[in-house]
Length: 240
Ligand code: BJW
Image 1 (cartoon, protein in one colour):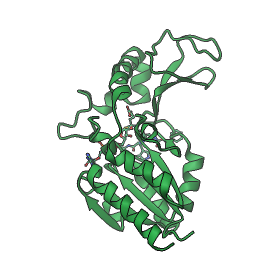
Image 2 (cartoon, rainbow, N blue to C red):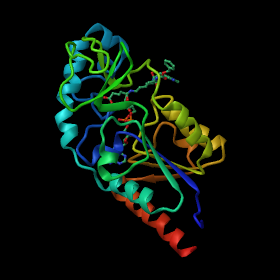
Image 3 (cartoon, rainbow, N blue to C red):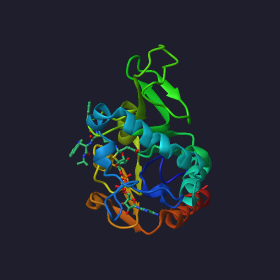
Image 4 (cartoon, helix red, strand yellow):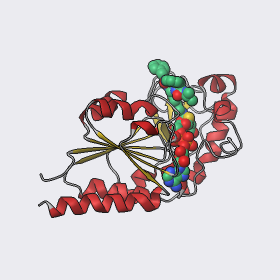
């Protein structure tokens, strides 16, 4: 295998889906779908008012179901399919646009909009339909215990065993469209760097943790990522 990198790990945030028309979390007005993220996406907010939080995510589902992948998602899918090294994606996004683009090795550390988790039995219900405080868990039969499978502030991230392994093994770490303010994801670059990976940042502007990246590519990732992916694929073909 004549690839420059053997294992590429990509971390994506809301910016990768911005050109698909989905709002990011920390836009200029500081609001996200007319709410402060802390008013909706905390475990305390869910415990205080589960009806409101269920309704908030139910209302978001149609938009996310209908959203289409943009050139950044498509470029990452092409990289996974055509690169002779390994390519994995860790996404903070709850949309399913990487999968719609054709990426297969995707790890949703902050959950998925089309899933609910039963707080009684821990099983996952996959659905684009509304879920609410009356929903019956199809696995254990208990009602009123479903929570959107979204990782709220104060909750542990998903797939972290796999993520730690990917961070330790990758030789190129690429961050795309994330502001670098939410931990532990904002610290992944540091872990990858510690284990020897080269680190690239793709964003509209410098992220909070930008000093941890070796290279910076600023601009819309729907324009910059396809160029980067084509360069990586061309380098591999030249060296064969
Ligand atoms: C473009 C673009 C274009 C636009 N092209 N770019 C250490 C230090 C300090 C605090 C903590 C810490 N460790 C943990 C914490 C606490 C907390 C935290 O980080 N707080 C900070 C806010 C200070 N973290 C947690 O609570 C996490 N849990 C945890 O650590 O648990 C520990 C634990 C262990 C064991 C048991 C129990 C507990 C959980 C974090 C969960 C985050 N959840 C959210 C909400 C999900 C709801 C939903 O999706 O509906 O996830 S918050 C929100 O922020 C969402 C996102 O995934 C996340 C990151 O946002 P992202 O993706 O970076 O978006 P933006 O909007 O911030 O940035 C977009 C970027 O794109 C910008 O830079 C733009 O410029 C760019 N952009 N268009 C390229 N076209």
